Image (tube, rainbow, N blue to C red; front, side):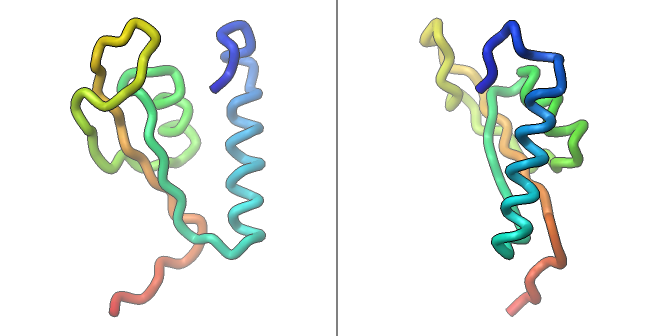
Length: 84
């Protein structure tokens, strides 16, 4: 989570790319995450090639305590595993 004053300055994109690169080096081929639906982070992940996988209603933790939906996303980093 980035400080609101640091948002929009490409720091989040750089951190995401660093995490993805580390996953590739570790041999990980699929990542998944969740974030508050409609948040700036959700837009960041979408623009970075993550695929929206679904929404869980009332699951996001937000400062005001009101339940909000969470968006689940995933990104394939390498060839998918063979079905078995």
